[in-house]
Length: 81
Image (spheres, helix red, strand yellow):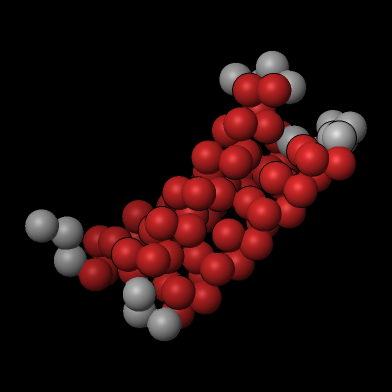
């Protein structure tokens, strides 16, 4: 079982990883739909931080997971992964 401190540490690492992944996308020309996905990923990162501050690690983790999924999809589309 993972306690709240372990969840928080994992989420903070995931936020750092997401920030690195976002940097990989800098300079790419996105379509309007792709931009929408990117903005949603950024919004989910904000939501992740909000829920983490509120002590809701599960919702925070769900938000960062959604964000990673959107970023991964953009990276696949643009042959980055």
